[in-house]
Length: 417
Ligand SMILES: Cc1cc2nc3c(=O)[nH]c(=O)nc-3n(C[C@H](O)[C@H](O)[C@H](O)COP(=O)(O)OP(=O)(O)OC[C@H]3O[C@@H](n4cnc5c(N)ncnc54)[C@H](O)[C@@H]3O)c2cc1C
Figure (cartoon, rainbow, N blue to C red):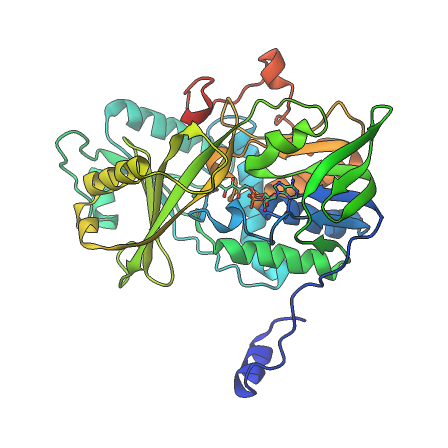
């Protein structure tokens, strides 16, 4: 079923009775060429690109809950390509280019809004780093504008520029960054994969990974055993648990990240704005809610809900940066389980088990990576070779220490990335 202006008009005039489910609900077959574990953004995008780019359609995505019920539907929807380090820089640049054509490609409205991302800085040292990062972005072919204090004031006059501890010195603006509607991204990829013949199997938790003679042969699930020649693990915060089914111990810690949304307000925040001296980021949804978040809850956990001290911490950062927010009422908050890697950068790689592939370690930033990650992971699974923009996301860098990508220079502590 395709979308068009004509179709929407016709359905509107006939009581919207002609719409059909966007994907089938097939029973799992006993065998597939390729099984993707995890029906989040990355898993669905991988399945889509396996079919679209490589013609592989004997593929199943196994999701233990419902499609898009994980982090892909819980994030603060920020999309950007403003990284500094080689490896990250080209990967996120590639991902943003895919975002820019995504809605046409999927024939699905993901509400992609390139409203610009503004990273504030509050000291001379931060300004120097912002200038260096902006140059890296421009060298990569992306866009960056270094703004002084007055430039920032013209753009976002509602901030507290003279805050005693953290006065605003300026900002690095990334015009092509922005937001997209997170669950629509999952739905669009799901529909696109289903239309190309991929089986999307919901309520199907993987409980074991079958390995014979060093080669993957299939998975055990709550809906029976499924044989497969190739298996991809793409389960975000559950990566350590699922990889353990194949005897692997990953360098991943799972932490909770919360998000908050206020009641709907008239348009007030036109861009994505991030605070440079505390971890705080905010944008306004098309419904008018201010959507914001901050730090992780600083203990490892598999509970997909946050705690109150961190809620207070985030609100304090919000009030420091923009006291005007104190007038808004928070409507909802929620949490997601983040797969935090020791250097803050992801893993897209083969494993020591033949035919078993791993995609994880997205930390705070895996939503913007969805198209790029799906594209690169599909390439790796289909061809057996790393996709160039993701070639540095190797698992063995944590064993050898070579090729670490510590974008923020925070060292090997998972919860600081
Ligand atoms: C509050 C919050 C805010 C965020 N904000 C941003 C942001 O603004 N920008 C950004 O770029 N990133 C952001 N992120 C990060 C981003 O959402 C994640 O990095 C990304 O969504 C993770 O990949 P995914 O979509 O595949 O994960 P998920 O959607 O979590 O998908 C993994 C899936 O695997 C399934 N699964 C787990 N175990 C099994 C099993 N045994 N068998 C079968 N299925 C299984 C899960 O049910 C889940 O559906 C945020 C995350 C959170 C929680």
